Image 1 (spheres, rainbow, N blue to C red):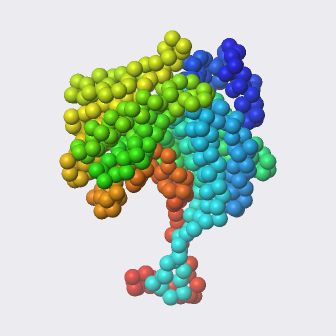
Image 2: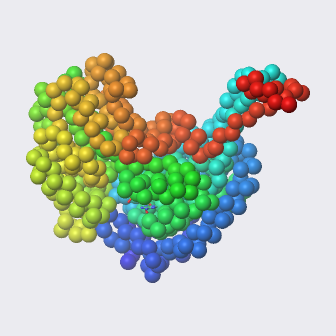
Image 3: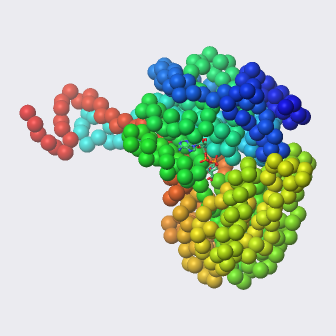
Length: 505
Ligand code: NAD
């Protein structure tokens, strides 16, 4: 089918450098956009032999890539960042088509790729080890960091290219080679992002085999997970997926880095700047149609301000323009597919059975215009207390509102979920803010004050605790996950003193 959308996608793919002969409707993987629900192009899946061959090539390339000086490896990432800048709009068009994001959010995602490239370039000169004083005279004790080998990256549909770049930019400067299995729901932006990296590698005269993409459904991911030649599996997606991946990688003593589901909350205290809190909550809860891992799913608000704040929130929700994310003014695009819509319906039903009241939203809209796409009104649900549904991540825009009387109760409610990704408190009380950030406060990997739960920056380590998987990516010392550490002792004393004063011979 040739439509205006498929034409613009074809030209964005072409601009990124994707081989258009791949787009053949007779192939086994079918791409479709959540914006209209229309099927776009067929793509060839990588079969088991193809995956095996890909891993072999990545493994062979590692043997030379690891010897390229790290700052020179950084040149590839620098070039990738330049190409991403040049093709920001092209790649954003593909992200928008795959994930249904507004152009501002799609471009923001590509900007995140550019940002991680900049961070990784600097990191390529800072793969620091430590030197420690040795207890023995004439000895040097130190740590050195070395690449792991082949890194397998498995990514989710909702950040189809940014998460790939977080992993790949750092993995490459650390001296690893990368095999990427993108989500089967976001193949077009994956091809675009990958083609730009291929161009960067070629422009720098490096081995094309340092990075690969394999296309397929979860079986392709499983092939990476089970292959002992893949030293690290970095997997982003649902907690269900993490439950399957972690034991399989552990069984072969591989390493894994997991970025899984969240169930993020904000506490709104009576002292909060309520206008600021309102804007923070609306963006975090309804933005990206609730399809961010860091989407705010729970609002824990002091009972004295709950009614007033909730009324304002409902009024703000009513102003949100829902629709085709390519249209001017639209802030909430579609859900990814019918399954996501069914998941939202079923969560709303369960919440009501548990005593919840839907205060606004939840309805499907634009059904006549787009019968194959799933646009929904973001929902706000007042809950009488903690419940099984509230503790479950539903990947759709539902915000559960719970009230509290004292701060300890708020903290207990906050932490009483299996996930531990992102969290926030809106307060002007400094002690409350400090407690929230302390070890008896939020148990999440990300804890914010007077800012929502979503929209993290590259500079800090990103990830979460408990069922979110414990992994950390992007900034700070996240690079260490892509390297192995060796402790080295060098003896220049001419004697052979043993540690701990042990005598032998
Ligand atoms: P998903 O788990 O359905 O799929 C994610 C990826 O895993 C896909 O590429 C899929 O093919 C692959 N996969 C699925 N089962 C597998 C298996 N058994 N072995 C190997 N690979 C397998 O997730 P999704 O629907 O694409 O994404 C939404 C989920 O991802 C949400 O739960 C969201 O919170 C989470 N997410 C988390 C983060 C984070 O950083 N914590 C970021 C983005 C998304």
